[in-house]
Length: 243
Image (cartoon, rainbow, N blue to C red; front, top):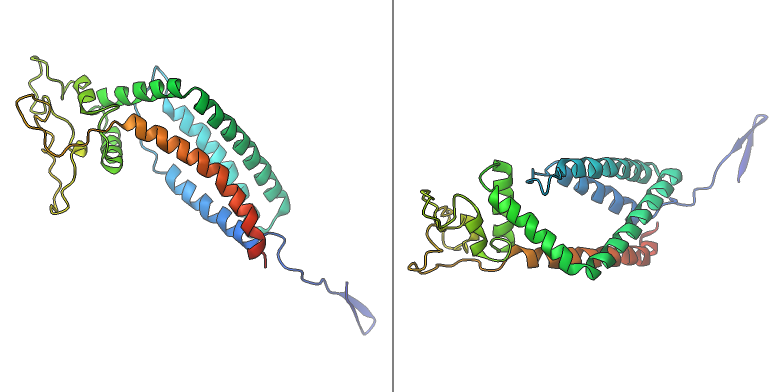
């Protein structure tokens, strides 16, 4: 440590050796924490499944995200090694649990498929019961271009879309507009495009016939593979950005 002496006083200067934390790691942690907090504040309501209230799940996820977000943001910005060690340990534990869950999901793939099928069908039945749930289903079907759990016929479970003689709804034997294939030439969404599309005498228009269960399974395995690969790339390239 350099030393300087002036009028009987000694001054010590600490040599700056650069930040102790990689810049790439620091700003990745800060950026992802901001994204996760934004997603967490927009979680919509979801119908209950077998008496399980998803609010409790969101509370647990929110508590974990708060701890990780606080330690990650403060530790990265202040370059506090203790907070970053806690953050990395906590993140490593979550990664291990995620890896275990991914292996179990691959082994019990059929059971997960059945649970997703039951979950989506329960929400199909409650489509009109909650406006947030309705918007969520419409967004998911429109974004992933799917319809129902396994196809448009799943909407027969909803009291407004079933084809029974007791149903007097105008949406009888139809599907939500989010099941229709969007026409790029139309500026206004046709919310009545799903009317009567499941009647045998009516020719089905441009309609998404793929179920959402298979798409959700593919997304689950994709994000699992991404969560395994991303930390490896981060560790490999972080020395290049260490200033």
